[in-house]
Length: 140
Length: 116
Image (cartoon, rainbow over all chains, first blue to last red; front, top):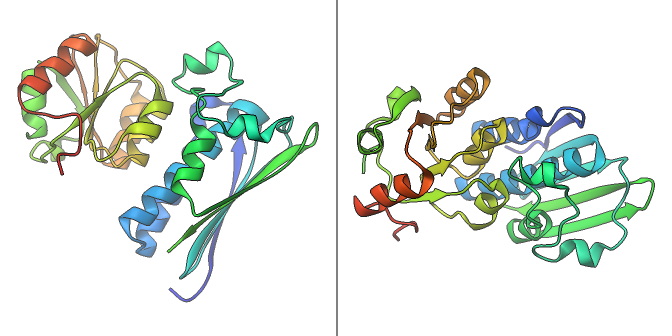
């Protein structure tokens, strides 16, 4: 496994029923590549939370995953509204999701805290009105 | 506890994953909030829920759960059942309410933690 393996997905923001599909595919691919169950679980949960966020808040975007020997990097880029107060968004339990999202089982304000919990590094580049790029790294 | 026993205890109908009936699970989680499942579940093999959407299956897949019990007579769509088959997850439906289903399984020996 010396090469870097890359995956790219267009995350459709118009159809909630497909939200999370890219993460399911990544999980399957990482299994095929022989990563440990712990690494696979951390990557897939973090990516899944981010992917759901992109659909809920930003009308979708692009998800890219780079898997190599020493780390897996997940980049989620959207052209959504941006995050006005990142510190507030990071707080467990804080959410701007509307009731119809809660009815779908999401929007408890645990997404970003969970992404931090399961990754070794998380960077948020966000500009209000332009979009957000989240870069997460899981070390092997 | 075997997955087949969960089906019997809850008088549930199996919709997917017949090949998993002999798989053993030791703990379960009951929630309609997938956010909470993602945040709090650790090593639970069974998800008990009344929520119907594809994210239930995907969330269980992310958490390495191997069985989903839909309660309150809720039935997953054919697309959800197909997705569960793909993900290797057993799916069953029970008429029992979430509290009762959880209580029956707890009394029969399933715990809320991984049991390690």
